[in-house]
Amino acid sequence: MELLDQGVPLHAVGLQSHLHAELEIDTHGLAEFVTELRSWGLEVLVTELDVDDQKLTGSPAERDKIVAKRVDDLLTAISTSGPVRSILTWGLSDRYSWINGTFARADKQPNRPLPLDGEFRPKPFMDVISRFTRDV
Image 1 (cartoon, rainbow, N blue to C red):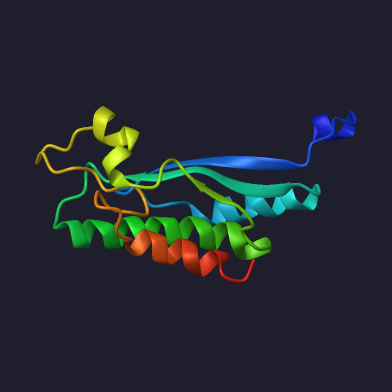
Image 2: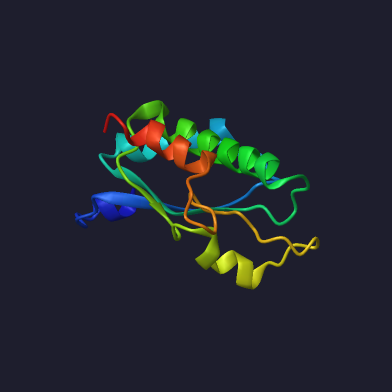
């Protein structure tokens, strides 16, 4: 990597992770990319994690399950070459998510992009984060 070759003190790369629930993640490609970054001695951080579910249909519980699956896919791919040491979500509660003010759902329901719902109750998204951070 050019920056490292020039002696620039680079220690980590943050992967901005604004995901779309209706889109599959290329887990193989992501795992290869993260492995390459780590081979250069760089820490890989998950940053700005949220999942836009505006295009999903179904009940909140069904949507939450798909959102959690996308987060699990992301973290599984990143963890193939080492533990996920840092996960920064782009907010905690759906109540205050930027997504609700930017991407309205056609059914007028609130988006559910974050680990806690609008009443600050944990959702499956939080369970996934807990599983990946438990042993770090």
